[in-house]
Image (cartoon, rainbow, N blue to C red; front, top):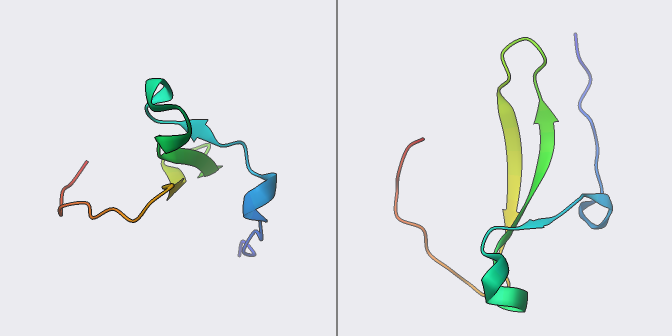
Length: 57
């Protein structure tokens, strides 16, 4: 059984999703990649409140 991994958001490597937007760009950080399935768990943060329409990937 795997134990949960605790991470401090300020210690994550944040990447801008729209670099040309500068400080207004949303950012993401990779939390975990499953080595068997390549399933990736991401965290997003935005500089202002946004509403994202329901969608799938």
